[in-house]
Length: 636
Ligand code: CUK
Ligand code: CUA
Ligand code: CA
Image (tube, rainbow, N blue to C red):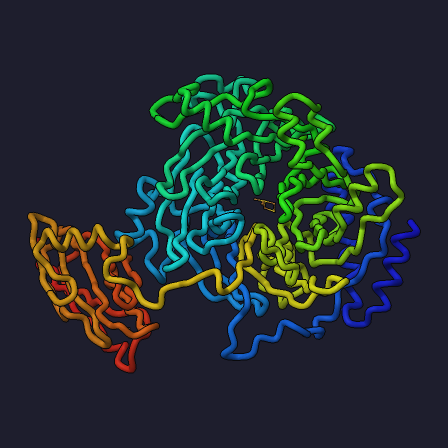
């Protein structure tokens, strides 16, 4: 293999990373062997059309230096995968700024423990795990408006919303009738009215024990959630399954990949067909059908369910090769791009042909305007706003930069090279994401590549390795790798938003809806949270209200009886930015954050008699250690 040899010498001449090439090839071979058994991999030679550019020296830090005390230009919101959280990073420094617990339980902030968080978790508070994949920021007219971030939970079929002014989760909805919400994107235009969410796995309809042995009767659905109320607006039954999704810039069309057109129930079965498809949804037509009451409901759910299977007026199915994965809309609004995964290609769908497709004037494949061959294992594509696309190649451990217009010309038969560059990344990339790429403002400055394996890139930390998020400068002609950042399981995706597009509060407002129900409870008890320190007994329920002002709690002791259900409500009266208190009741498994001007509460059973100290566990003052009190539990 001549091209491979070229790569070899090319990389060897790069003194800074002498071993990379060997590692990359080792990994590629492993990955190929992994799928080759099924006879899937083709186009190997063509994938290497271009000499691979080796990673730039890590010492080439030009442009990423963000000095101590200086602020980043971008917020990055990272999904936390099966850790269930969202992480906030500064880009380009890649400094982790905050973690936002969503589907996980968080000891530091008391997420999943405090009453306020448990109310938001609702029924699903019984789950302590989640799998967060796709974080997306709400939009107005195709631009990030900084109001909300939405994210899916594949593990428990939920969609959550984070308020970006306080960087807390404020709504969580469990989607009925389906299993495993995976792909999630937002309506971009005219604004984010809907959150679009793909349910991945087909299940019997209704899933009550019927049809278990008849996978041909399983179906899954495409879901639209009202972004303000977070109620499910409607669901669309589809053929096959659903993987990733994205919306257009007109507000009418949304497209989703399907890798399991076979409706297989085993790995091998999902790879039977040479082509699966992209299903396109006509949002306007679906809304019309729902308004005209052309829907059914299933089981206990009241959500309108419309039929979007093949032949429906609401959808169109565009065949694409093989087990496609990512689906990405170009920021000029012209194309949906489906990433081939088991095919070395991406399929470029012209959005301006979709109206004709729905009018049956053209055939599904007539909407394809290019199918460039990029390399092995294309998973996700992102854009620089200058007409170039960047596709991750999982098996090749590379990012391929290619020009969309040239790929279209090539598809029309012109002899033109659409590939611009291939850059090694370390290793096996999933998502990649360029700055502002999902909006009209795509600015082509930074590219983050979320590599699934770090291998020997960092000091060893046992059998479980970190992943490796790499930062690439794409502002020039060539991609330049400028930073490695190890991450904990498992960011699937991230989004980069300009710093001025997000406006977080510095302290809480007393009338914040986040703790409104706790305020209402205090009002019923005749308690003024901003001043009173009181114990209210209500049968076996005891409510303990106290203030906190560094370094003291308003109550330094309170008495309850063994077996009481105790609710402690703490209101932080400090008004100084960054002056967060905590409340921890020793040996009762409860603690929580109480930030400036916040009210937070937690409920537990005082099941053992004796003295129990409580203390503040967020460092707040020189006398923080002395910020404590005693709960005296009288024996029953
Ligand atoms: S998926 Cu994980 S790498 Cu959930 Cu967006 Cu492609
Ligand atoms: Cu209050 Cu530490
Ligand atoms: Ca398939």
